[in-house]
Image 1 (tube, rainbow, N blue to C red):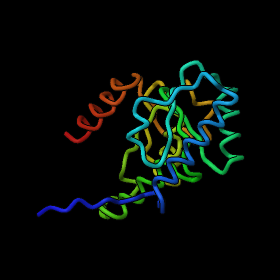
Image 2: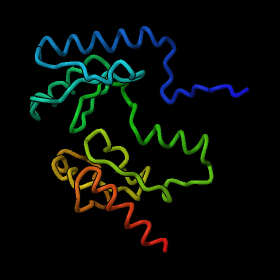
Image 3: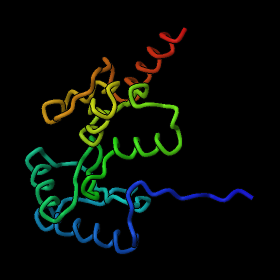
Length: 173
C-alpha cells in the first residue's frame, strides 16, 4: 500500500496556531487597509496567508511589508495576490531543499527558474540559481527587485513561458 509522505519545507510545529497567527496579522493589516479581501485560494494554503492585490499601490505594498516585518513576518506579492509568510521563507530556499532531498543529481546551475513577480525574486538570485528567466511582465517590477532575472522573454505570462520552452526544445535538437 502506498503511504503519502508529507514534507514540510518550512517547519511549523502547530499548524492551527500558525494559521490563527497569520489571520491575526491579516486583521491588523485590515485596520489600515479595510478594502483588502482574502484570496479565494487562501483556504488551501498552509504556510502563508493570501489576499487580493487589487487596488493596492506600491506605497501601500511597502507599508504592508513594513508592518509585517515589525510583527515578525515576511511579506511578498505577485501580480495577483499578496502573501503574509514566515520570515525567511522564499521560493529559492524551498526549491533548493526539494532539489537536495529528491533530485540530488541536479545542481542549481543546471536548473532554469522562471518567474514574473516580486514573489519570485529569490529564484532570480544568482547565488542560488544563475539560470533564471523572467517572463516579460516582470519588467513592471524590475526597478523594485534586488535580484533580477538573467534573461527576460519577449512575451508575457503563459506565452512567455511557452517562448522559453520553445527555445529550450529547439536548443536540445
